[in-house]
Image 1 (tube, rainbow, N blue to C red):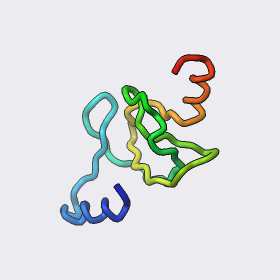
Image 2 (spheres, one colour):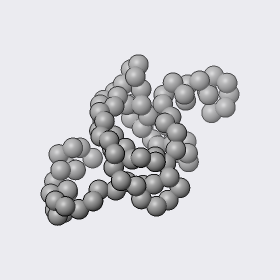
Image 3 (cartoon, rainbow, N blue to C red):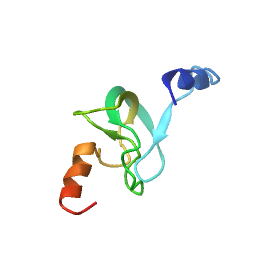
Image 4 (cartoon, rainbow, N blue to C red):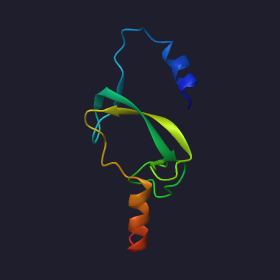
Length: 91
C-alpha cells in the first residue's frame, strides 16, 4: 500500500475517528509516531515471528512509512540481525 492509497482509504472515515494499530499479543494500541524508514522488501521468508519486510540502514531498496504504537508487537528485527543469525546457523 502506498501513502496515496492510505490517504484515499482514510478519507472515507470521520476525521475525528481514532487510529489504532495491532497491540502486543492482541488488543489494539494508539498510534504514537510515524516514521520514514529504509527497508528491504520480501527479505524475510520465515514470517512466523517477523514481517516480510525488514529495516535495512546499509542497503535499503526503498523508504517506507512506519506507523508505530506505544506497545509494538515485538522486537525490531532488521536485515543485519537476520544475517548475523544465518552466520551462526540459527536461521
